[in-house]
Amino acid sequence: MGKLILILLSVLYAKAYNAQTLTAQNTNPVIGEEVNYAKGPYFNPGASGMGQTWNFSAHVPGQVSSYIVLSASQAGVTSNTLCNMVKGDPELTSKKDYLSVTPNGIEIVGYNSAILQSGLGCGYLNSKTDLVYPLSIGMTFTDTWSGGVYNGPYTFTVFGTQTLTADATGTLVTFNSTYTNVIRIHAVSSYTETKLVGGNPTSTLVISCDSYSWYSPGIHTPVLVVKNYPTPGGTPSTPISIFYNLPPDPVGMLTNRNDLSELYKVVNPSEDLLIIKSLAPLIEEINTKIFDAMGKLIYEQNWREIQTIEIDVSGVDNGIYYLVIMNKEGRSSSKKVLVQH
Image 1: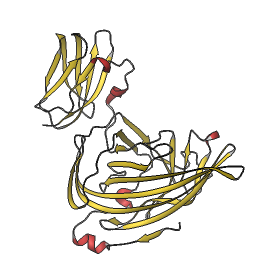
Image 2: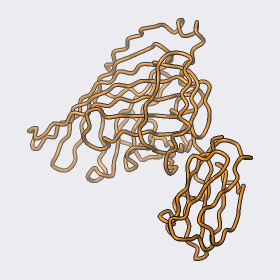
Image 3: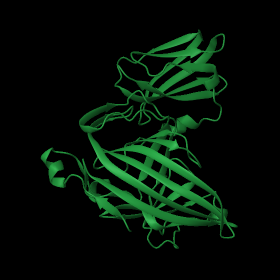
Image 4: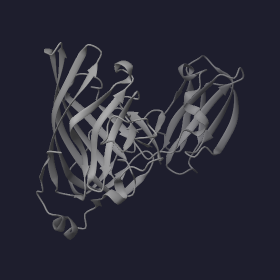
């Protein structure tokens, strides 16, 4: 697809240093697989190089969401013949990315979004490279891509360039797990979007993006992405982190409609004590429950007439847990808490 590939260091160099290698067999998405993810604020991605340890366990994202990887026919994509898989976009939940997934890599060949009039999809005339295989430390490649979309009376054309470099390997520690076999991809990209009316350009928007993605061979998504927009514009343009490879929210505990979160403050992360402070004059009567990441109830206690609750969590493993607080009227508050001894 008109790609320029430049290999700075050979695969033999990577093997000599026992570096990780991404291949289609251990990295490509799988049709029918459910992908769970959660978004959080941007943070510094840390150092490059071999043998790094990145400890980001203090960064706890928000609510877990998910999408299912679909085939083109399952997603109803008939106009884009290059597309063979469709996945969700964590940054824009109304957007679906059209992919061409092959043994040689992953290309983004278009997308669809609810914001487009009549659900029209965008097709890339020159597709955007997401990954190429095999990919090892020290390898880099540059890709140019372009496309356009019709949305009512408007036409938008986009032209962009992206350089991806496998700049680091090592161990990644997140709030959810430790990954000892990771390779990091640094992507620097920019694109120009031009709006045309009646064939005449009326506005031009330039957007740049700098992102880092950590991959662990055998997991069909990155396990972590941190992304910044030095030249912001359009949507999205807010620096962000995205955690993948997560368990689903147990019994929807983070989406309760009768939220009590304005009444209680939870000290997070917790070491040996999980501390809950009432922002009201006094806790009259509440029930607290703690679930592990798989939804198993590990603690339950009723409390009455107390200002601050202290729950002993010294005997539980480090990791993410779900705290549910419920009052006698049935209103509840659901929070993720990180236990880190």
